[in-house]
Length: 287
Length: 245
Image (cartoon, rainbow over all chains, first blue to last red; front, side, top):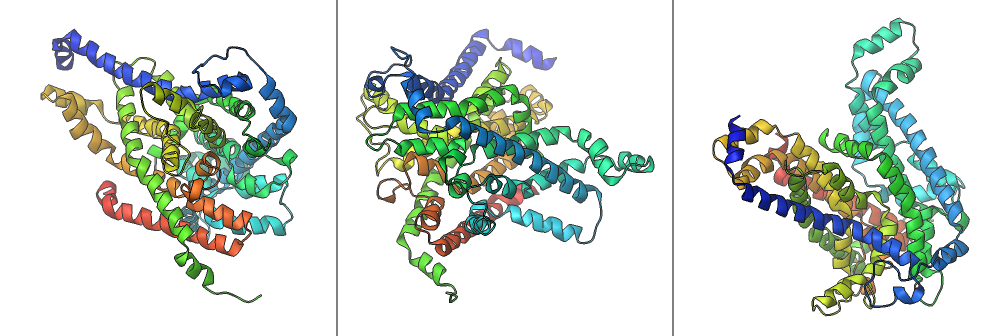
């Protein structure tokens, strides 16, 4: 109550000024954050001449679809989209399955060498993926997986971070529930499937979104292991647009390709934004 | 095949291009990390204010740059940074600043820093916002009753309560910065003019997968690991001790 009294004592003018500054900052941030998206979409519909003009125009004077036609003629973009969607989806499901299974074992079972194995897992999280890049490529080469979907899906099908993340969350599942289920005749796998998984749904959603986004946007690894344009992921495909026409950079077509590549992700983000944000919070604040 | 023992690592130490790549990487890291954390904190504190409506909207907008693919965004920034018809130079001309060659030798690292700032700030803002919301509001109420001003609240409550989280953000960003690849690779087409924006991972990619010197690239990979390890260790030593106790 004292708090409210103090609030009233401050002049309304001061509050107004504070509000003004706050909204000014937030609005400036919004413009900066959104502008590149608008500029990308706008440029993709401009005519070639208008892209190179020095007049600043957000809305094209004439909507032209020539750049989309050029981009789709030059590259199998629908196929590339299919590749990215297939790879990201399979990777996400496999990774969720393996990471939650391993996390369950680490959290709820005692087995020989559990502690050393867990510390080993934590230690591998310290090593950046790029350190093993050459070795990983050589392994793909030996397995004859270069230029196949396997190379994109299998190496990421379980991650140390995912296992760690799931284990931390599964530690919060009370043991009594699991013991009760076992007494009722559940096999260990049934306990995992019917009891544990439903209880850790928020963690599954968060990890799933993180994995999916990472895979959708990944660039270095697909750039290395994919060779034929029809097997490229979307990101590798649009990066190849830069050099496609030889003389000058086809900016319009690049912007068209980028718009096409970014749109699905923005839709997914807007649909699941609550889970995205809670995912960051689970990942960051809990650690 | 004859084992060459430590030859790759000896070459690495004497390799000027490696040291240049390391210098560029450090420049791009130090050039953005402090500005980014301050910006993220400013936005988070602003957004956490009780006067702000539509918090969810702003949070989504600021987070959007982080969701979208770096490849696509780096391509879009290539157009924005274009010297002759890029919108950034056109806007700067309006306020009387002469044309800047953003992707040239002198400015390419700055262009990459701007791209990183634009992309990453929102993520750290959401993290810090979560931290702010977990601070007990009674702390603020008690301080206000005792006559504290807004700047006191920030200095003596908000910052100390967020210390651990800021440290976490700093480490995460440092590790990410040593691994920077897509931004320089796309925005400045490889390493930029005269390798001015060559990062270590871009150099690793070039040696291993364009010039097919895989052994040397593997040595570079270990160099990155050692650098990240040392940097993390130094940071934990420097300010980690108090934070974790």
